[in-house]
Image (cartoon, rainbow over all chains, first blue to last red; front, side, top):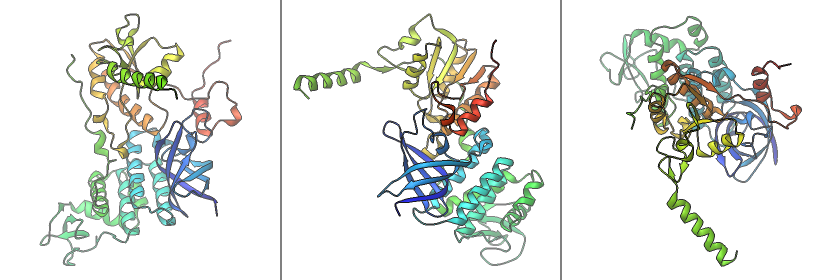
Length: 246
Length: 166
């Protein structure tokens, strides 16, 4: 069928020609979609604002040979809180970058899509680093590489688990330890998140190890993708200072 | 195309390439070390308009509403494309504030995600320095019909409404 309708979350956009853009979207039924949106860079475009990264939309597209063409767009949610606060925007962009990496064109991915929309909604109400962490752990589960958190990933031994190693696929006990050292609090928090209690964890407020859990989750995803993510919180840490004048 | 037209076009391109340089102060395109705007003493040096691209200066200048000076960042934050603060002329912007006596910085980046991220990032850097930091308004294009406006733009236009002077 030449014309199709689907939901989508805009992952990224790229300038094309004078006033067009190539929009990359994550959709439940058509997987990753790359489509041309014509004239959207002009201020009078009706759909330009609707096709910004992070927008959750329903759209009507023509099937093209290489690129589809977006003809109609309606916004379901623009996730405004994520656009107006840098501390929420960066983890949201990290999620988009991860989905862009794992999604396959024309390959339906309803579970991944629902998870992305859910995570963005959660992030719109909570700026906790654990939202991104929860997204990453859940994504690894969907990808079939869920972390081993209940016992040592190497020998199967019980607690205490003292390290995390992505190549082993989870936490390690004292005698097998390698990779990154972790605190008992981190182990417990990751267990609860992987076990599906993200809502409960978020309702408790900061735990003191939230940043560590996020870092661990992002590292695990980077290992799975076999590449470093470009969009991380640390990107904005290095604030440049004024150069000497003259 | 006639041969002489092609030659003139080729010469014009070569001339542009040979004569234009980036302004050492604001990074606008000019034909001298300081561009025409930076060299103009009548411009108000206390207000700095930060734009992504030299083309944006042309757009703002067309309004004839702005009499201050500019700073060209050379892009917008786009981590996914590998553009972080280090790739933009942020350090140079901060270096201009004190020597030039800048009291207000207008963040005139594009009203898209990258432009908004850049504006928020710069505001975070500039506000602690005691510089008034403002963002250009978003709203409806003059001459357009309200019914054709998209909901995001119209929402922002409503949010940024102002009192009408009677």
